[in-house]
Amino acid sequence: MEKLNIGIILGSTRQGRLSPQVGKWINEIGQQHEDANFEMIDIADYNLPFLGTGTGKEQGIIAWQQKISNMDGFVFIVQEYNHSITGALKNALDSAYEEWNDKAAGIVSYGSTGGARAAEHLRGILGELSVASVRAHPTLSIFTDFTNSKVFQPADIHVDYVTTMLDQIISWSKALKTVR
Ligand SMILES: Cc1cc2nc3c(=O)[nH]c(=O)nc-3n(C[C@H](O)[C@H](O)[C@H](O)COP(=O)(O)O)c2cc1C
Image (cartoon, rainbow, N blue to C red; front, side, top):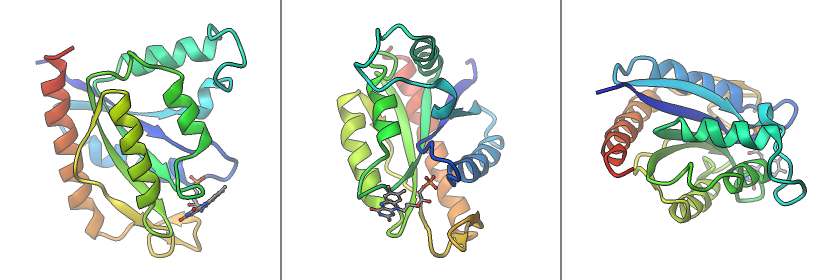
């Protein structure tokens, strides 16, 4: 079977964001899985217009939909903004539809309560997009997994759970490939 393609989607786009550090860590752990290719997908690279403000045919939207279409599964790097996901991530989710359908995803979140509230909002949205979200959900504390809320230094305890999550994503991504 061909290797699966798993996209690690950075949910935040602000200047000074922490998400690239978390995405890089997941990517490094992902590289140890032989049956999947992992790659970082940065929403900021696509200059997505706010949904409905343009023609819908902008180059960034076409490239975004193509990238999502090429993936078999996803890891969402989710940060909590006002108890939910970022506006940028919601807009990116809304900017594709069929490209998401019948795929699997896992969520790695962070915030003062591990980003749990944002992650649960995302699960509901993913359900509507026919993306199956796996059970394992590593939650990172902005207080203890980041030094001065800036430099990512994850506790060792998280690594095994990330591996469990990636195993679940790979298993469901393989299964859902047969549905598409
Ligand atoms: C607009 C905004 C709202 C936030 N709201 C919350 C919140 O409701 N709960 C929380 O735990 N952290 C909250 N935070 C703190 C973020 O989780 C923290 O700044 C995190 O680093 C943001 O992710 P990023 O660095 O990738 O942008 C908020 C941050 C911003 C910028």
